[in-house]
Image (cartoon, rainbow, N blue to C red; front, side):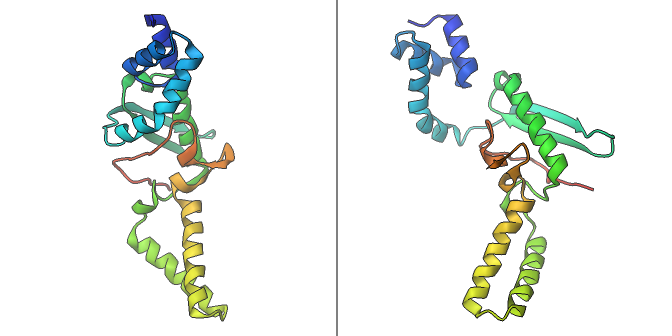
Length: 187
């Protein structure tokens, strides 16, 4: 019950693979809306299967901020060149590059923050907490709270997205993870 045009349309709407779209359309007797529901219902299981797969396609997106004093070169990957060529993916790359230019994150994920930086921050927070005269058990909680805040302000995937502060970079659009081969550097 699925033809090539319907499969292509569902694929563009969902970002799902061709065979997944074909099976969903067959299950939904060719109804596009029902096929989307089928894909959504099976999405969690499919996302778990995809977690270990390689994101070897994608694009390198250059962004030069107006005034030409700041630039970002972003590598963002996906599983297929089909996805990389979509307007949505390219728009996502532009949004993330603009976000990086605006917020200057020090790393992509919390795990990427260097031990040196983290220890220095903890030292500062510890000193501030001790100067407040709070008990030791409260001081530890204060330090952890400030470290969490540090991550939210300085780590790309934890930052509030500049175009929609109700979301983090990790939760916008198609982003489930960004795993660059190189650290973020800003000057």
